[in-house]
Image (cartoon, rainbow, N blue to C red; front, side, top):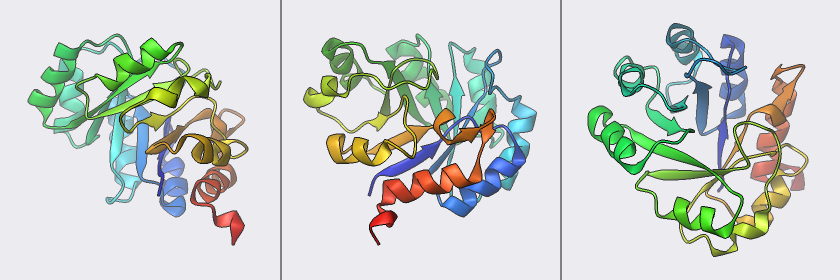
Amino acid sequence: MTKIKICGLMRTEDAGYINEAGVDFAGMILTEGFRRSVSLEHALAIRRHIDASIPTVGVFVNEDIKRVIRAVKNGIVSIVQLHGNEDEKYIIDVKRKTGAKVIKAFKINSREDVMTACGSKADMILLDSGAGGGKCFDWTLLKDADRDYILAGGLSPDNVRKAIETLHPWAVDVSSGVEFGGVKNKEKILKFVSEVNGDYYG
């Protein structure tokens, strides 16, 4: 079964939506300066509303490692996602200093990008079209991918079933694709999860 990650949570009510939907991972952007960025304090408040069985993922972009360590040690997140230019040494340092699993995001423009991603020392790789642009990249570039990956970039309830049937990713990641008016929408989240799980067949 394909895993589901809903990213960019900003409100405590978003936690209720993902609890009801039964997703596998909940993501929050913890580096400042992005539209969906939340403070560590607000992220902790959201975490307290998320079902304990759902791991939280902290998204960081070229962040001071001390802030990453703080987020893990304070119980805000249990998985670290790196979405900047972090190198292999940084990935290893995060794993060693936090004990958390690390997801490394890669922008995919070529097969070389895919090969670079597949060679990462991160526990999981996320293949994306960019930094939250809400657009799909060329999925044919993934035909030579030789490790499990999280597919991101432009996914929505309208295309996620096709993505799964075409690519068979280990997990799918969505943010803007389940929003309405710039915030998470419960109906879209439930529809997305239903499409991933194939519930519409029944």
